[in-house]
Amino acid sequence: MNEIAIEAVNGKAIERYLQDLAALRIEVFREYPYLYEGSLDYEARYLRDYAASERGVVVIARDAERVVGASTALPLTEHSEQLAPALAAAGYAPARVYYFGESVLRASYRGRGVGHAFFDRREAAARRHGFDVTCFCAVERPADHPARPADYVPHDAFWTKRGYTKRSDIRAEFSWLDIGAAAQTEKSMVFWVKEPGR
Image 1 (cartoon, one colour):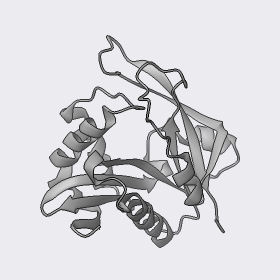
Image 2 (cartoon, rainbow, N blue to C red; image 1 turned 60 degrees about the horizontal axis):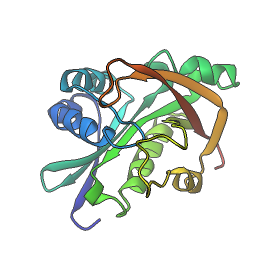
Image 3 (cartoon, rainbow, N blue to C red; image 1 turned 45 degrees about the horizontal axis):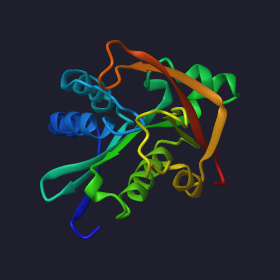
Image 4 (cartoon, helix red, strand yellow; image 1 turned 90 degrees about the vertical axis):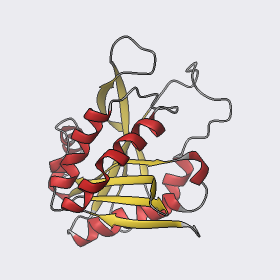
């Protein structure tokens, strides 16, 4: 990570990065498995929720002044209404949960420890704000999906080493427009949860 600077920002400090973050999210999420056809306007609006949160955080990875990666987190109760019911039904009190949104990193910067730094900073923010459960959810595509690259390796092993447990029984449904699609389709998102002591 020689030339990569990692910085956790929150509140109004996020605003100066909104356009860079929006463009980065669209670029990285076009890759499998998200295959996301996004818009800069939507992404900037979405990211403003993090800037408005007193307990949210965006972890920025920079190469000099260029933003090359970012990772988001905020209290579950401040995120979209689609998430809390699934966790509550599984026995988690939403007010105890700090939700990790997304991590995006340009391909040429992967494998240098940035992913660990993203988790370290977000988990530190969760502890600082008194949360004892952290979680995120990841899209599940069929194993035979036609856009799946031959060399694709899921992040499951990395997430497991970080202390997260895949909870295939806890899911939320999200819709977005896939690259080249005419309309949005619903995707199943599975939760990964880390509890105290892990």
